[in-house]
Length: 293
Ligand SMILES: Nc1ncnc2c1ncn2[C@@H]1O[C@H](COP(=O)(O)OP(=O)(O)OP(=O)(O)O)[C@@H](O)[C@H]1O
Ligand SMILES: [Mg+2]
Image (tube, rainbow, N blue to C red; front, side):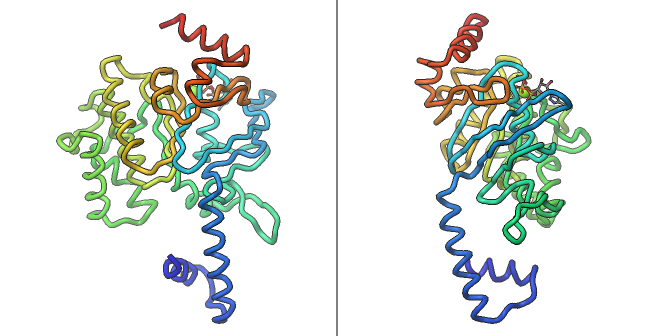
């Protein structure tokens, strides 16, 4: 660990004096201990506006390492926006998002928090993987190439390394035999499994899933949920999932957050939030969802 820090810093900075270097290393070790106990994701008073519309309203949300959190709530309540902000697909208008102890869109300079450089954004963003409702695969690339692209261009892996990693992950999602297929030759469930493998190829610490089964035919939903179950059971990953599937949210989550109007109105363990909600808006939402089933 300390060797890694040394090498990493050697790349970035001029070599400081030996004693200063030891102090720096001690500080790094203390920082990494602190980071392990910190939530891996923290939204601190985050506000997002589109023109006059406030979509996230001073949102506070903390997610612990390896925690599995589901976000539920009515259409337009800001669920996707939360994930898009974490992927830095858009700028926030207020507050700070912290990932792994670092501000995502800002850096600390002389004790001040200032907007982050593109380089900082790329580095922190690499800790997060996202799977979208509509797959968003590159249509002109095979399943294997889809999973190799970002590890080569962003992480700097060699073609050989990226190919080995991609093949392993396609096996993990049960698509070892389809790796040379293009997206058009795959079913919706298979495309979504490629999208999951592609996100995992970046070795993220946090995985975001945005209604990943809602564009699928009902009989294909199970195969995608099974992959997510397997990931959850076998890998140390923090997961944040927007879903309309209350049954899966109940089984999968450590915590469910009910969103309304860009705020968390109520949250708790699934048995409590889904089984015995306290807030009137949560009750109304769950009744409406159950009626349509
Ligand atoms: N790029 C944008 N420009 C303007 N308004 C936007 C933009 N993206 C989202 N919004 C608005 O922000 C609000 C929240 O959108 P968001 O996509 O987060 O909702 P959601 O909770 O994911 O809804 P759904 O369940 O329908 O997916 C909506 O009113 C939406 O119209
Ligand atoms: Mg959405």
